[in-house]
Image (cartoon, rainbow, N blue to C red; front, side, top):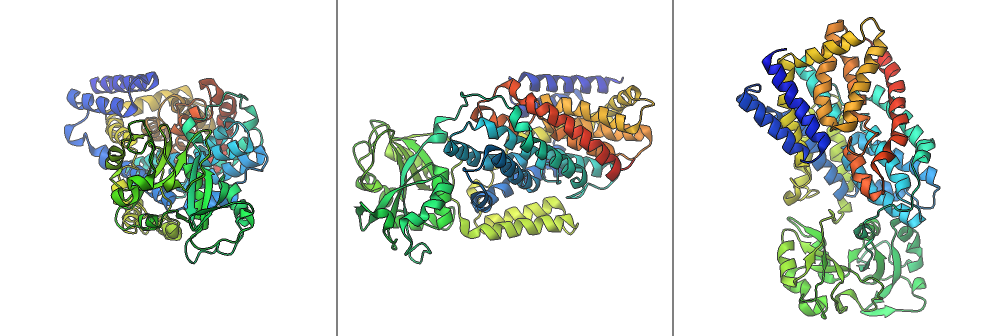
Length: 590
C-alpha cells in the first residue's frame, strides 16, 4: 500500500466516522477532508474544485430548482387534489400515496417529492383522525424507491452515470435505470402497500409540530367572471373537504350573511370566511381560482417582477398592531401588505379580517411584497415564526411548467440535448416566465449537498487514481473467488447497502461505483451490471433515519424512533436484492 493510499483511506475512514458521529454537518466534514487532502498533496490543487463543476453536482442543483417550479406552478397540487381522499381506508391511502410519490420521484428529486407530499399526508391523517406515523414511513420509502427508476430521480443515479462516462466514455441514459430500478421499485411498492405498513409500531405519541396544525381564520373573494358565481355556498363543500378547509360563512358588501348562508348564490365580490392551515388555504384558493379578500390584494397576487411571499408572525404586547386592526394601521396602503389570516386559539372572530382588533399572542398570516418581509416585520413590531417555505401557487402557469419540463426530459432522453443543458434551459424558462422568482432561484438549491458532492468527487477520483479502489475491489473479488457471478453482485450490493444505511448515500456511491468497475475489470466482464447493483443498493437505505434524507424528514413528524425503521426496512432491502439480482443478470448480462 502506497503512502497516498494510506492517506486517502485514513481520510475516508475519518469522513465516514465523522458522518456516523453526526457532531458536525456532512458538508463541513467533506470540505475539510478535501482541504486536508490538498495540503497533504494527495489531491492536486488544480483539481481540488473540479467537483463543483461536475455534471452530477450541476444536475442535482438544477433538479431542485425545477422541482420548486413544479410546486409553485401548481403541477403537483393538480395531481394530489384530484387523487387524495381522506375517507379511504389506510391501506388504500398508503397504496395511492405510494404510487403518486413513486411516479413523482422518478421525474424529480425524491427528497423534493417527499417534501411536497408530506404536508398532504399529514393533513389527510389529521382529517381521518389517525396517527400520521402510520403513513409517513411508507410514503418516504415509496419516494426513495421511485427515485431508482430514472437518471434524475436520485443523486446516486446521476453520480453513477457520470462515473460511467468518465470511465467508459458514455453515461447511462435517462431511462437506462428503468428495467432494474423499475422492477425493484414495483416490488418494493407492492410490499410497502400490502404488508410493510402493518409492521410499523403503533404509537399514540406521534409528534405533529404545533405549527403544522396552526388553523387560521381567513377570507377569499369571488372574482369577476368566476365559474363559481351563481353556485350555492354548499356546493363548494366537496372542494373544501378535499382541501381540508372549513367554510364558516359569507360576507357580502361588508356585512356578514347569517342564517341560510349556505344556500345563498355566490356573487362577484363575495368573501368566504374560512378556517384552514396556510397550505390548505392556498390549495382551496388555487382550485377555485379565488382571490384574497381585499381589493388591493388582487394587484399583489398578480404583481409583475418579484411577486409576493407569505410569512407568519406573532403579535407581541408592544406591537403597533396590539389593540388595533390591519385597516387602522394602514397595512395595505402603507406597506402594500395584506392580512391573509388570524390564528387565535379558542377565540371566535366575527368581524372582517382587516377590521378585526388584533391582540397580543395572535398569529398572523401576512402576504408581503418579496424582499420586504424584514421591513414589514420591523415596522409592525411583530415576531416572525420559523420559515416553513409557504408560497402562493400561481396555477395559471401549471401547463406551461409541465410542458417545459416534459419537453426537456424528452429531448434529453433521445439524446437531442445534454441533460444538464436541458435542465438549465428549463430553469431559465421558469425564471423568464416568473414561475420561479429570480430572488428565489438559489434558495431552492440544497447547498450542503452541493458542497458534499463538490468535495467528495475529487476525493473519490484521487482514491481511484492512487489505486485505492482497485485494492477494495481486489479484496471483494478475493472474498468471492470461484463463486457464481450473482453471488459477487450480491456481496457488492450488501456492502453498498450497509454503507448507505449509516452514511450519506451520495458519499457511498462515489466510493462504491469505482469499486464496482474495478471488480468487473478484475473478472474481465462488463462493468454495467456492477454499476446497476450499486445504483439499487445505494438508494436502498431503509434501516435507519440517517441513511437517506427522506427518512430524516419524517422522523419528527411521524413520531418515530431510531429503531422503528428496520421493521419495514429490513424486509424491503432483502426484497430489493432478491428482485434486483436476476433483473440485472437478465437486462445487463455479464
